Length: 395
Ligand code: AMP
Ligand code: ZN
Image (tube, rainbow, N blue to C red; front, side, top):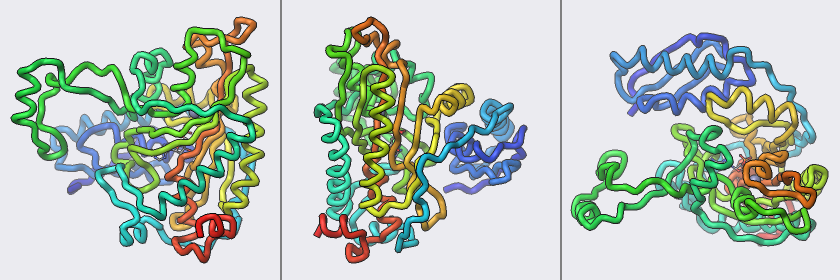
């Protein structure tokens, strides 16, 4: 139970474009922080702490100020380009659908950020996915199935640990040792916030839980020239991003599902397919009656990498986000993205074009739980009030 507040004046005023980014990073600053709030004016930070910080208050403040300085000092607001604006599309619901979903037993929170979905959400997600598969069919995308575990060796090769260390989820197992396994079997208990077993019982980490889908395709193509020099693939996969205290609703899950359409080839091939994706989805989102906009964005890099990498992504328009309106909180939520990675994976993984140059990659990714959540936030749980295409498909 958070009982104590710590009010801080940030070392530098946090500019408006960074308020959300800094706030979400503060969750990772110290285990005592239960929640963090950065005032919209950027000149005040309020921390709710799990216990009186006492002697640790100064240390926590120093860490918070380090995050603020590293992310905000000298930061220049990116030029956000809006490619589509359909935010004014009419919607008929204005409550948080989670309350009603929980009350009806349609959603169950098994643990923080881990949700079970009942028939309504499951049918909606299956329907939305069928619409995303129309995009895959349009490109004659080849189907793939990827594992949930992802090789730590490959993630290292693509520098993932530098970019997103905070959101990783590790897979481990008991070490192959009779005494350890017996001791675990006899003593293991869930106590407080987790298992009571000591860290030395567990193996070194060889695998992580996948943070994204398309990486698996690139790993499978590593160290070879790409036959024919181009490929369009599609896959759905379970993804994991540990979002700490930010895991408070259906908006941010630890365990979620992504459907991706993946493009591998020359620069022009990838950029043209990304743009065609956006234009194709325009019609589908209209039929779904979704109020949204598409705008330039950046990935949530961790503190040390944030400023440089985010600016780079923005400058080269590497990421467009599809942001759906959440009427109940007058904000928007990313339900998908159109991404271009340049030749990053080609270079790091040794995947080449017929001319020997590194391949380029890109992907269109949809967060399925978020699409369903945003749809219900805009149109409510009563099918009679849904846009015709959805109502008819599900009746
Ligand atoms: P990204 O690769 O970060 O652009 O993610 C693609 C999509 O996955 C996002 O637009 C979201 O819809 C979804 N997504 C990403 N992180 C989460 C999360 N923690 N919980 C639920 N959905 C997520
Ligand atoms: Zn991807």
